[in-house]
Image (cartoon, rainbow, N blue to C red):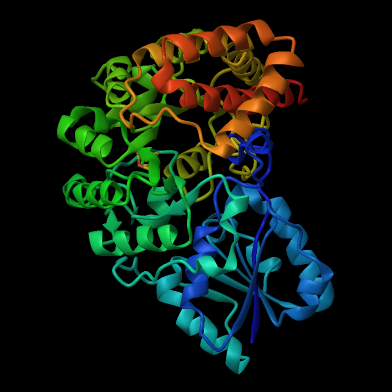
Length: 494
Ligand code: SF4
């Protein structure tokens, strides 16, 4: 059997970092980890080829070669996925779709021959037998959530790491919290399941053997979902990384209660975590309560962010507007919070009610769902009827983006961040690719730009007062370019 594994294209979103990648000479942010894991579960007798459409398009020759096409996607990749499925259908080529999209796109069976809902470890063996015998079912649905102790190493032979800006590893699935808008807990459950420290070391060894050096994204939706287990893992990661002369810098996503645990923060620092994404959502306590985001209430979110920054981790964060309880001044409050907390990369989105979530079910009961949403929180088309006047909500949202990514305001925020940040790796030298990115950044942002003055103010501060953080400053200048481009595109959209 010849299996073509396809990862559809990311649209232009915060996480695609599409406008920043050319500075680094990269084509995509991270490889398709889910498909690489599925690849390891397929029989050795199968021939396999992987096309990540973010790296290159699917060619007619690929489709001609394949007996079956396996696609893994998230909801935001829907459009690209549908285009690929339609080409397969024209050729009568058998298709299988899995990944998070299969849990939230109810009409998917209309487009794919076989749909896999749930985690691959439970289902692939059955699917393989069905495909080989010609008896594959239209739907494969996992009855339970598997432990991760049998999850194989991803098959890195199918990718060329040099095209990616980061490598990726998954440590755990699931999150113990209960945010109303969250689809993660619906798909992966509220009891975190984790790999063993030995499995994680094997993943690190594999990346090291493939000569990867640099950032590694731990893709978990909440890395600290089970703090006790994470505390067993982190010293092992720290020891491994130190013994190998720190080839990797890690970043991940975590809940805000990370700030409550100084032991855990120190352990992450020792293990070379230098960035963490937090779901802050909103500074309005009444909206946090409405969203059942109780872990973010009764605390000073500002102080929490600063504490994490003091442990050598840059905080990136997600923010949402559109909650029923959002006060009239929510737009100003979001801007003020983002600027005061010195979070350079603030991903602000309009609330979306994704199918399958508690929020979707509540709004459906209230007769407020308009359409199914596309998982892209930069989309200005609301998929539900908000309490606030919709035009006021969209205009207010635009005004947040315009303010926080205005270049002088953005660069000032980065300078403030550098003043609060205490980098811990002591790594001041720049690699060859860092130097290339720096040269491109100077050309694009420091010479051929209307905002060169603000850029050079940051550059000067980074090369004098914050020399330890010079690399972080340049990376943030480049990331700022991505966010500024996205803002222009979003605010000009109808
Ligand atoms: S903390 Fe994050 S992953 Fe966990 S339920 Fe809330 S939104 Fe979902």
